[in-house]
Image (tube, rainbow, N blue to C red):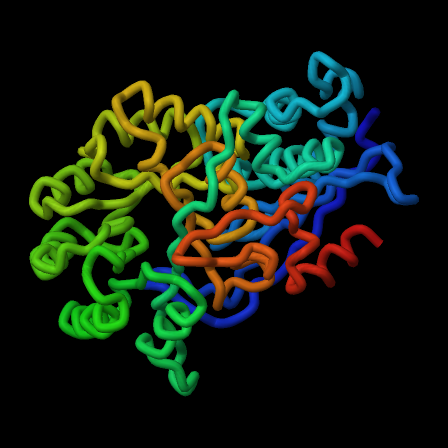
Length: 387
């Protein structure tokens, strides 16, 4: 059994939403297929993966460095001890050959696209959903349906005819009960009016989260914290620069409520530094590292080890992303909840229709792998990639 080809395709995100820092209209995602010599139903078995949402495609790194390394590796060196599955850890080590330590950036997402495709591939070889493959690999029992909340509340371009209230009410009609919105893209008073509007739909602070996308300096962060503190929100997300651990710790001390951060940390050592210096509290705050941005599920599991070895519960881990791959990760690894993007970031955002949301909980379908083929918005891209 061997890998015969790795294909990649840059897929543009649809829509023109923006947060306080980034307009996503120019963003792309790397969709990857790892094709093997195993033939079933007249077709070669291929694993699919991508590098999550909200960054850019990594075609150059994939084509120039990582795919050639993988194809040059001895086939047996990529297999597990039994020789019947691919070893995601061994694959990741090959992808990172001759890469210096540190500098965790775009290469982390490039490697993750391939590494996660290996998990999809292994699940398809076992004819089971990926959450079962993931759980077994890490000695866990998959959880049942998990809590899901919706990401949204963006700053929409003028003339879209959509209000924040309309958006969140639509999500509530879909079965969601908790909502996240963006702040920091408007003056404080205007943002607080938006928060009040969202609270009317959410029904209380424990069902609403706000996300500043790393926009604030300390003075602005403390001003927002003062206004938000009486509302008892579920969490205050990415308050300042993701590597400014001191700012994070100072705002936590002043704010008192739960904060969330981590989506822009791409390695276990970054996670360790956040734990050491960021003021995060066991049983209280939320870690949002995303496997698709962080070298894949292998490195993400190391991040969880860091958290647990420092007294945190893995249920405090709620990955950024809002897509099918992270839904399988949450269920397979027993994490706290998962995000969904039902209205934005297509064709990757949200889940397939087979992942029914009931009482604000969801679980993956029983399709083999991550079930990306069940997501109709991805059909054209997958067909093009595998043609």
